[in-house]
Image (cartoon, rainbow, N blue to C red):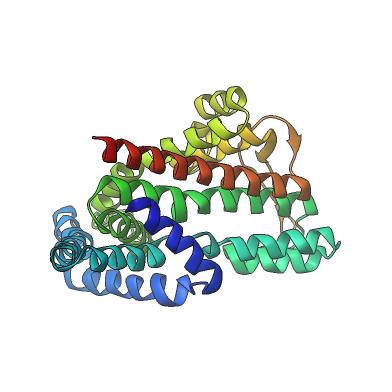
Length: 307
């Protein structure tokens, strides 16, 4: 059922791309903000209670709904799987931005590529070179493929029905919303949301990095994975970026010029500087990793049938 659900979501997404920000991110962000407004007293134990209501309660309710629908008709349970997966994962959340940036760079329209990157990632892009835009786009695509595809897919497999997919998406949105809303260092409310998401994302980060290594340059990917993530600001996401950069044989990270100022960042990867050709290579890496996942799901399904 997992494989058929995944195939169905990919097909639906091609014909009806989802406006993720408007339909998913904003409503769930409002839900996270509502729960925060009722519980945030600045203490950690309030954050624990709020997280249980904001994240765990919806997951349990959806799980109960899945059990009910499946008991009535397995097809109804499958439809719920497809619906939740469609809302919580997908390539189109980032692929159209990436494709348009790649096209603009190939046409030599650097200004448009900068603007598209700014619209996608919400960063200042004035003064970025074509290599900088390529580098930041590849980083964004590798990170987004983990957040929107591979991590959601793993949790979808680990938990029954659509519970895992919803758990990952809600935990990420709640963490980001509560962390952004906690400007003071003494506010302990968002601590548990960060810790909980760190636990939830621990295994997906490493399976995504492993998938990139398997379908790319394995030795360089493993070397970069072992030696470079600790230097990245977000060490966890640095695991995925370092492995992806090593698998591609490209240099990511490093300094970029933003609005006339140099932004120093750790270097990731081994090989040549990023350019528009490496952007296409990154697309191939993500798709090969996706095929690897689908093959594993197929083999698991065969093993289940044989058992």
